Image (cartoon, rainbow, N blue to C red; front, side):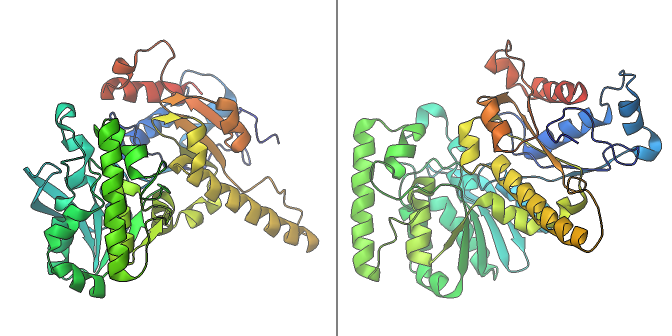
Length: 396
């Protein structure tokens, strides 16, 4: 059958038997879990008024699909919830400081001897009022407090999500919060960074020039921040005898990526891939019929390593593996169709640009849930967004 066909895919007279929903959050609106639940609700009433025999069959009691929802994050917003959901860990609440050194309550996770640190819990931009944002003053001190708290509890392995920071201090605040203990932590602990950012620390593609304006920096501040980062990297290189400021990811989270790479020998990995590995995603999709992913807005940047594209890559890899298996089976006399056992992939996002590019990349369907005529302010209302998702799904 035609893989681009918008009709229902039927198997032996039944509808979809297993559907996996794995969406990123719709930032500023709905969490990953809320997006997944809204899509699941839409599926359960999928064109209930449509008399189509295929759709009636889909919803018959003996053909109800198994729907699996997976909380997702690429290392930014919602990273802690997503990883704890996947790894079944303990949530720890502590008193710490935000980026302006104000006392707040923050959370991190513990799974056995591994801590899950979402740096936005303390150094997050969302914690700072827009009029108060100033990366010249913002500090990553609170990140150091979370790591120290976990270390004192006996944790020796860390997964650190680097998204959503208000800072551009190269991790200096974090190191200061640790005091001399950073040397022991360096010797005793391992760090894996969950981030899709590949920028270096300094220069026109570095932390200051690319990200600081989003955090409240003007042109003069950007230059000062870049100079400060370059100086810190020079001093650090002399101390250690090596320089990791140019490694992809050093510019993540205002240079926190650099501090982890330089001072703690961290390993940087795409956050989405790290989570998908923890979930065992490649195994889950082996017998799935449909995978649904999405984000707040999809455009050509989606295809540059964002979570939906990572999901698509994993499914395409599954397809290629399946085709190879089928080819071998056919040589052995098994004439199973090479199109019979790999899932379709739908992209369901709040807004969609470059739809054709998404289809060309391999998504079988691309669905925009927000009507073109709706104002952004209204679309970002959680209740409105939830209803838009349900309507978009059930009408497909």
